Length: 314
Image: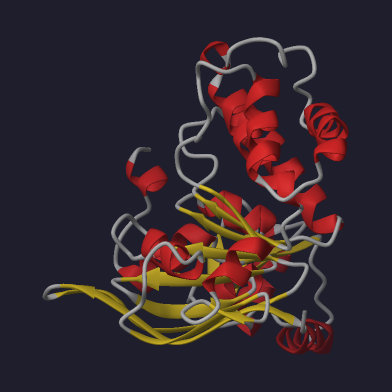
C-alpha cells in the first residue's frame, strides 16, 4: 500500500434527478481514523457503498488499498471489511457459529479457523457468551460480534457505517476503544457518524458532507478554528484589576460577577502571545487564563445550517 489507503476524486452519484454525491474529493492516509460526518441524507452511506463496490458511481474515480473500485472490485473486496448501521449477525446461530461461518466463507485456511475464532472471541470479550444464540445478545454485544466477523479476513481497511447508532454510552465507549486498538495494529478505519463527540474523540481527520458535497475537511481542531467564537477568558483577582484590563482591552466583553474578560481571538499561540505582551505592557496579570473554541456542534451548524440529531434531541 501507498501512504494513502483511500483516494477519491470528483466522485458523483445520482438517482434519477436527485444528486446524492456531487463531485467529492477525499484522501485517507493509511493507519488512521477518517470520519465522514453529516446529517441524514447527506450521502454518507452512498459514499461507503461506492467505496466498498456495492454500487457504481456515475463519475469520478476512487482507489481503495491501491485498487480502482470500478475496474478492480475483487481486489478491493479482498482488502476491506464492512460493518453497516445494523449488526449483520445471524440471530439463530451462536456467537462462535457466526464467526465460524465467516471463516468458512473466507479464504482463511481451515486449519487456522478455530484459532482465529478463539482469538476474536477473546479480543472482543465474547468468550462467556460464545455458546449462546446471538438473539440473546445486547445491542453492544451484537455490534462487537459484527465487527469481530468483519475482522476474520484481516482487512487492511475497515468501513464502519454509523457503528454505534442506538448503543448506550457505555457500549459506545467500548466500541471506541476497540476502534482505537484496530488502528494501533495498523488498520485504517473509515468511519461515518452523526455523533459529533464520536468524530471528535476518534478521528485523525474529519470531512463534513452536506447535500452531497464536502463543505470542510481537517482535524477537529482545524474545523473548530474556522468558526467565529474562539476567545480567551481572563479572570482577575480584584474588580480594580478587571477595570484596568477592560480599559486596555477595549474589544473584550466583561463579566463583573466572574471578574473576567472574554477577548476575541483565533486561539493560536501568536495571538495569545500578543495578548499577554499587551497585559505586561500595563503591568497587568490575570489570575487565570483559558482558551475557548467552538465545539463540533457549532462547526456542524455553521457549515450545514442544521443541528445534528443529538443536538435536536436535547
